[in-house]
Length: 488
Ligand SMILES: Cc1cc2nc3c(=O)[nH]c(=O)nc-3n(C[C@H](O)[C@H](O)[C@H](O)COP(=O)(O)OP(=O)(O)OC[C@H]3O[C@@H](n4cnc5c(N)ncnc54)[C@H](O)[C@@H]3O)c2cc1C
Ligand SMILES: *[C@@H]1O[C@H](CO)[C@@H](O)[C@H](O)[C@H]1NC(C)=O
Ligand SMILES: *[C@@H]1O[C@H](CO)[C@@H](O)[C@H](O)[C@H]1NC(C)=O
Ligand SMILES: *[C@@H]1O[C@H](CO)[C@@H](O)[C@H](O)[C@H]1NC(C)=O
Ligand SMILES: *[C@@H]1O[C@H](CO)[C@@H](O)[C@H](O)[C@H]1NC(C)=O
Ligand SMILES: *[C@@H]1O[C@H](CO)[C@@H](O)[C@H](O)[C@H]1NC(C)=O
Image (cartoon, rainbow, N blue to C red):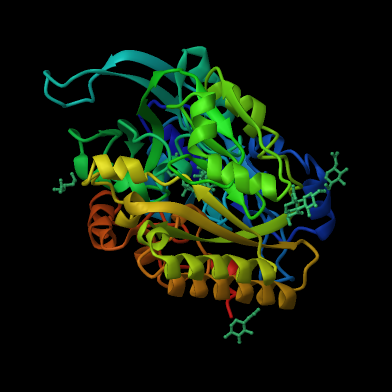
């Protein structure tokens, strides 16, 4: 503690928003665990707006050792400079972790005994009509953008964008950060135009296609926790417009989430009647099944979000358990071939029968990829050729035994192995990947993995930033036994 305070006194940097947290791995009594977990149990918003609250218990307590069930017990303070954590870690050998919302399946936002950087305090946002990314030529066509500080949640971002009369897309669950790992490790939504980043070496940097382009490339697709602390992100945006939604079983270029008995598809290019016509075969099928159909037009995406997603499709869930997922991104060739399609349906039915709920999201940037054959991000290239993201999940509770947890991990690993076999040319979504996948880097980023390590070496040569399945991570690093200990 005292050393850390000295560190602040010595530093001359000026960003005051970061909140740093130290947590001690003291063996707390289980009584305090129960009390803390009970507080704000059902509200991810309440829990994720304080440092100690995470979305799932695997981020708070040791999962594979029942004698080490202490909650992370943080001490918080405000540093005066944005790089002193790195200086301190370099000198002392302390491990670092970065928490944004703490809504994470992979346990990347917490680490026992680490000095934590919490980005929730970065609350700025702005709209700019004519933006040219820094260092780009003066004749670059300017475009409208919206900028969000790393502490702005999805729900706040939707509302802020609506306030400016523009559309912004981010995660479904409203507590997720808009500039954290959701943005950094994914291909959903609009391509970001620029990031402000504090890397472990050097000063605060702007990364876009003209300024620090290699860092920009790495940040978009594999940026979570590995290359520095993202302070804010800037996104191209467009005015709000009306869109049509429907609940059906169709694909046909519509986007949205599905489960085996429910689908929600959204489109901003067609009228209500055109929607009914385009999806007639799917609607007929639903009618024959005695299902229900609802086709409607919303004024804008914000209205669709408030009516359907916030608190409805993404209903608040009890927050006293662990959920782990596995995902497979499915290229379009599997939809064009009858046998491949059947193998996929069998796989869905088999995993459902094995007790793993399935969701399939028609949210891949397939049409973007068609129009931009070389998007050049660090994402696995399969993202831009795919139609579906298929997800399976498993759960356990605070009272499940270690034996039960291991059995559940085994089920998940089997589902991962099965999907890899059925969709060998696919990949996984790093944010919702199997925590126990051995080939995690290749499954997330494919051949980009090698260059990602080069960029990592250039901004973090001492490997100060590490988190599970983040670029440069190795299982042998200390601090990851918590989940690794459940591997079978
Ligand atoms: C219930 C649930 C629902 C989800 N729904 C969706 C969805 O609808 N769509 C979707 O695409 N994904 C979804 N995800 C996946 C989601 O994108 C990831 O969980 C992601 O990690 C959330 O980002 P965060 O920054 O808020 O999380 P955190 O847990 O706070 O951070 C995760 C990791 O990201 C890194 N990180 C966070 N902030 C920064 C920063 N400022 N700078 C550098 N690194 C940072 C850190 O390494 C951190 O450990 C969902 C996840 C859950 C658990
Ligand atoms: C993609 O971007 C990286 C990083 O700027 C650059 O090194 C590479 O040459 C680009 N590749 C293509 C095909 O444009
Ligand atoms: C769909 O399936 C889920 C899970 O099996 C079930 O809970 C839900 O009630 C079903 N919904 C409908 C409309 O049948
Ligand atoms: C739908 O309802 C009709 C009338 O009640 C019934 O005859 C039919 O079997 C139902 N179809 C299905 C697939 O459940
Ligand atoms: C929290 O969720 C549980 C399980 O769904 C429920 O039984 C309980 O009543 C909820 N508590 C509150 C305060 O909403
Ligand atoms: C997973 O697969 C292995 C190998 O086929 C098998 O031994 C094991 O029982 C399976 N686990 C579960 C939980 O089904």
